[in-house]
Amino acid sequence: MIELRHVQKQYQSGSHTTYALHDIDLSIEQGEIFGIIGHSGAGKSTLLRSINLLERPTAGSVVVDGVELTALSTKQLQEQRRRIGMIFQHFNLLSSATVEENVAFPLKLIKTPKAEVNQRVRELLELVGLTEQSRKYPAQLSGGQKQRVGIARALATNPHVLLCDEATSALDPQTTNSILSLLLDINRKLRITIVLITHEMHVIRSICDRVAVIHQGRIIEQGPVAEVFLKPRHEVTKQFIEQVADSIDFRDEKLSPDSTILKINFLGESTYEPILSRVVQETGVTFSILQGTISRMKSTPYGQLVVKIEGPRQAADDTVSLLIERGLDVEVYEHGLG
Ligand SMILES: Nc1ncnc2c1ncn2[C@@H]1O[C@H](COP(=O)(O)OP(=O)(O)O)[C@@H](O)[C@H]1O
Ligand SMILES: [Mg+2]
View 1 (cartoon, rainbow, N blue to C red):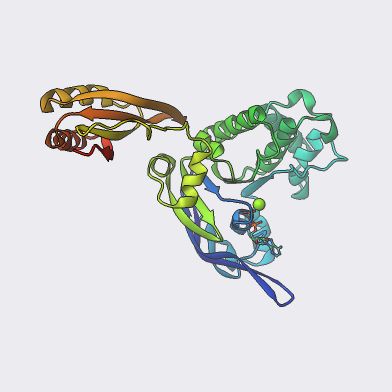
View 2: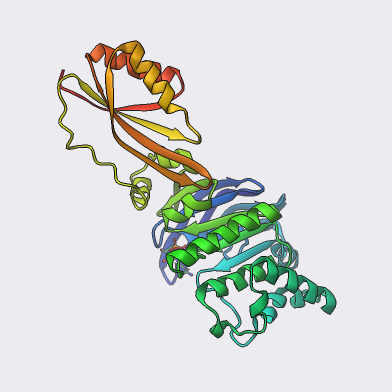
């Protein structure tokens, strides 16, 4: 759906060169919600704006919907851009136009017949829940309502892709959640592919299917959100996950020589409980749960269970092998001194 190959971007100001993107390869599938997370200055906006060529890469190719945008003329590019909507952190609405005029704007630009514009604007305002506000001006709206106008406007030309540049970063947490649910709803109803950038892990966890972590202009890690959450590789990724961690701290637990601490990761409607009780019966160890956390990722529950096993080292090792054999994702956190 979206393919970035060896995308590079340098900004030249006088004799100074900023390397904003280095050799970015990214494939985003039709219909998914793909998140890109990174700190300020990491290159997120440059990357997002490369997808519709608001920033033209200095090298590499961008293919959207099977069309290589980097090979098009200006006029052809304008046409293709209608298939890519975009929303912004500060909404970028026309302040002297009403809500409905803002939404109608992209349709008027391409000379859509008036009756059709009116019909489409009505549908869009209903979709984003702003039917009552259609005659208001942006200054009369809350932040969340302004972003809803931004979303309706971005969807006016029936795009296949929606790019979101820190779309919730100017909103309070509750409003953020309502905008995220709206994006999820739009993704499901319209089957539109969404690419969003953010510095907030909460946003990724709430609605994304896959995530890429960008650091100093490079993608340092990517994968399904659950995988990246449970097994982050890179230090920067770990820091982002800490933003939303329900802190697990069992380091003070006194370990007797015969104890082992295990971390069991689980995802979805997991069956770790029966497996765990059956296995410890077989190996003859005893266990106690030190900590369990469950969170939600999009609509999937996931979490970690921290378990202390008491028994001889061999029995503990057998327990771990059996748990893994029966399909649980187990890590040995610490063995006692035995
Ligand atoms: N128009 C520009 N001219 C020069 N440097 C820029 C320009 N836009 C962005 N940069 C630089 O490129 C890097 C990445 O910026 P940006 O993509 O905006 O990061 P992010 O969105 O992750 O905060 C930064 O070092 C920034 O200063
Ligand atoms: Mg930015």
